[in-house]
Length: 273
Image: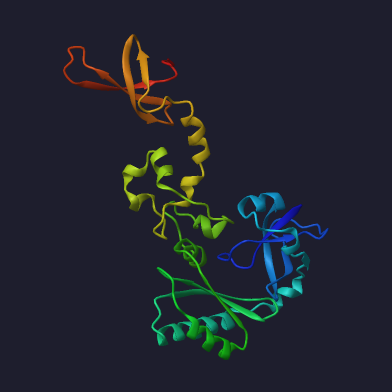
């Protein structure tokens, strides 16, 4: 079964909905029902029920709702405007200060039917905001939801320019933020530059490290493993380093007189033994 991947805000988690025989394309806006609220969201892609079950085996077809309809132009006029959203954020920040909570509000989302308000916040750990939510519910007379997001999501919301001089990838076009690991930087041989030079404005490793990762992984398969014994021009040595883009390796040889060792870069296009 084909499903649409829908987001209500750039920092919100991805929700899955049945297409309901609708002709829907990526980036279309749709109206859906979820958790007793009617929402308008953007279609960021498509998947299948079997793929969703691989990530969460407990998901059933029955619990996935249908898309109600495509959003119309006049529907956007029903959305909360900047003034209303800013006022809601300011009130939330005042309550955060009142209860002296270690958290930072960064964005707010009103459901399409105005029955629920979701506040996005950043915090280092768990925060007990139960009393604050009670005050919010009384003030807004709506269902209140607080969602903790990561610092990468904050960069997505606020926007900025990256070291390349272009708009942040997470703000410009990335629909899903994938995991960026130090192993990627190691394989691409840029970890030696220091964390500051390979980290984005969010303080985390740059998303662009993932763009060529598959290419590096494929190229790495062509190289001998570290520690492998090789024969180069009649001399036996051991692989101690990789140069992925150059498709070469560093080979360590014992000195002829037995005193010390020598490391030489070897081009695998010439020596493939």
